[in-house]
Image (tube, rainbow, N blue to C red; front, side, top):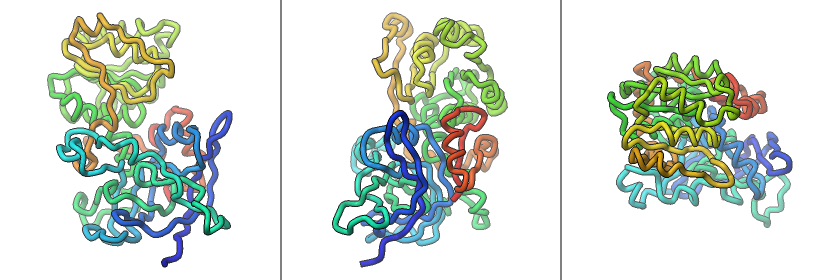
Length: 384
């Protein structure tokens, strides 16, 4: 039996009034069948990490936007090699109808990707007891310097970039492609199937929102409306492809209600939009989103929404044959969309450099804080 691997990891523990985070030394056994061990170079921080940290259950290692190099192979893994640079995304089963078609997110997304108990142990734990810290979040738990990762979470990068790629510099930049940017881009590419004639509204200028804006720009959409309350993010959205912006802070926010947002959007796109990428989960923005659709348009809801349910404006939607669509991961297959986004990035059409801010591991708390604050930093990335 091989000795357990030791790793530095950010451990989240649920608690009141908020979860706590601590940098700890943990151990885990070698990779199992259909797994590899990844030596992380960098990990993007996502709002989902903060949300899942607060959920009841055991302490856990989160992180689901990892990138690094393969350190070891699990039994039966032959198509990858130690040292290969890889990007990590969500885990798929490979057997369900959506996986077979490649047209939708894996039908087993929830059971495969939420943190599983018994992944990591703390030094001094009784060898006879189950490991105390949950892991394998999104098949990777990349808030760890080293972690086992599901083979089906792995996107090999060597075939996508030149042999002389400076991986130490590039991996932290590409790491966030595994979730946030992919979810936004996938919503535009896969769910809307946007065309140059499409008008798109993107609510919330985080990584998901910027992924949608940049993808809409790549596809040549005639109108791209960005909605947010942070002026600096809206300025960046214009720079990266938005044709119009709406600052909800200047509308009086919730005091003016959804009517103010609808009025502002209709002022620039009177006929309405073909698709809304809604990433905020804010009631006032969701309500506005359902009232700005053109004929046959649809709203894609990506965020955690109002806890007490959602009131649907039935007649507003009925009169335009509108749709409200709950979407996971932008209905994206990482093996297809990640290479496409990397191609866009190499062509200068997906400028991640303008959105990613790197934090050395010594500043991991600042990275989590930047995501929580939602200010000027769009995508914090922890560099291990």
